[in-house]
Amino acid sequence: MHALRGAPFRASVISRHLAPALQARPESVAAMATAARSSLGRIALGDTALFVCDIQERFREAIQGFPAVVDVSRRMIRAAEVFQIPVIVTEQYPKALGKTVSELTEVLPKDAQVFEKTKFSMLIDEVSEFLTRRDDIKRILIVGIEAHVCVLQTTLELLDRGYEVHILTDAVSSRYALDRSTALHRLSKAGAILTTSETASFQLMGNTTYPNFKAISALFKEKKADSLPGL
Image (cartoon, one colour):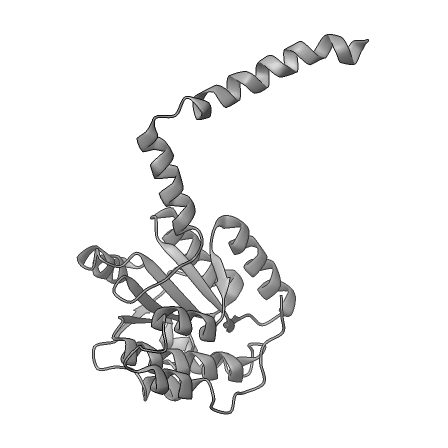
C-alpha cells in the first residue's frame, strides 16, 4: 500500500524532469545531436594537434614501459609531420629532469614548438596562446608522462576548455601501473577518449586513397618495443 501511495508522487517527479526534454525546440535537439556525434571520437586532418607531454631523460629508468612510450611517441611525431598537424612538446623543469629524449628531438618537425614548464598541466601561457591563435584546432592527441599527474591535469584542463582529447594509451604511462590505470579510467569517465596510436592514425587517413597511406602504414609495420599493459 505504501508503494502504491508513493507511485503518483514518483510519476509526477519523473514527468517534471522529462517535460523540458520532451518540449525541446528543434534547434536544441539538433544541438544535442551534434554534441552526441562529437563524443563519438571522430578525428580528421585540419582540426587536430599532437601534444607530447614531458618525455624527458631523467624519467627513462623510472617510468613503467618507458621504451614503449618513446617508441610510440616517435612514430606519432613522424606521422604528425606527414599529416602536417601541429606538434606541441613540453618539458617539466628540465634543469632537474633533463630535456626531451633524443629519440624524439631528432624527429621533431621544424615547426614543432617546445616549451619548458613548472606547472603540471601543459597549458602554460605559451601553449594557451598557441591554441588561441589556432582556433581551428578542436581535438588534441596526447602522449607522454606521467598519466596520473601531467597528462591527467592537461587533459582535464583541455576538456574544461571544450577540446576533445584523445589519449593514446600505448604512449602514456606512470611509474606505477596502478597510477596509470586509475588515471586512464578517471579520464575516460571525465570525457576523454582512450585510443591507440594506430587507431588515431588510421582515423586521420580515413581511406586507403589518402596520398601518404603507404608512408603511415609503414610506420606501424616497424618492429615495436614491448607494449604497455592493457587497461
